[in-house]
Structures are given as C-alpha cells and as structure tokens.
Image 1 (tube, rainbow, N blue to C red):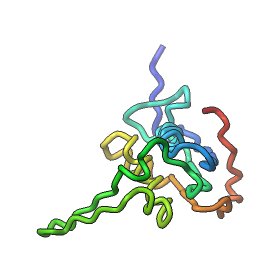
Image 2 (image 1 turned 135 degrees about the vertical axis):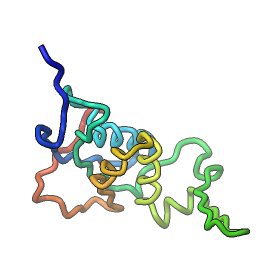
Image 3 (image 1 turned 90 degrees about the vertical axis):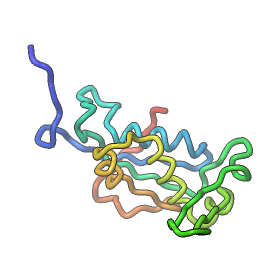
Image 4 (image 1 turned 60 degrees about the vertical axis):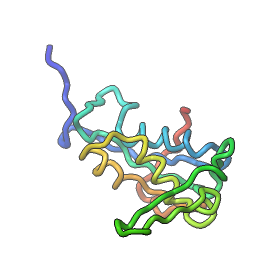
Length: 143
C-alpha cells in the first residue's frame, strides 16, 4: 500500500462561508486558517496547498475579548527613523476590520510559501453581503 500525497492535480476545492458576527476574532481566524490549509480533510498533506476557499462575512461584528481592544496595537514601520505607526485595535476594528481579520488569519498560518498561496483564497467582507454566490459556498458549521 502506498501513501497518498495531495497535489494540484488531485485536490478538490470547496467554498465555505464563515460568519464572524458576535464571535471572537481569534476563534474565527483559527477556523479560517484550518480551512485554508486543508487540515479538515482526510487527504491533508503538509507540504502541499490542498485547502479550500474561505469567505468571512460580518468582519466588523467580530469581537475582541478581554482588554485587547485597548491594549493591543497594530504596528507598522517604514524603515526610516521615527517611522513607527501604531493603531489601537479598537480603532482598527472600526476603520479596517478586514485588515484585522486578515492579520489574525495570517498569524495562525505557517511561515512558508504555501501560506502565501493559501491567503489568496481568503475573502473578507465587512458586511453580510459577498459577490461569490455563483461559487455556491457552504456555511461552515463545525467549530
């Protein structure tokens, strides 16, 4: 008996919808990362990109637990002296909730080239509407 190895020729990608309304940002991101990597499939292969498409809706309604809204910061640096910019997560969730969700999902993925390809299949929307009805996405119910 030989071991099955997934590759681009023999994987089947599905579309899933995750609703982030009222759920913690981290739990939604962890579920999205699992679906993007394909770890929920029996034919999961760590070195192959065998995950599914993920649509996250209601990103602005995701909640931050504890004191994260006040104590957690999104930091970027331009590389120049004095080029540090900090944004409190409370403000980031009000202005750019899609970015906050994308950063949370990216932080839960491995640091390799498979992640770069997987994150192109992540679609995040602020409200409940998304333009992917033609792909017939399924609602992900398992937590």
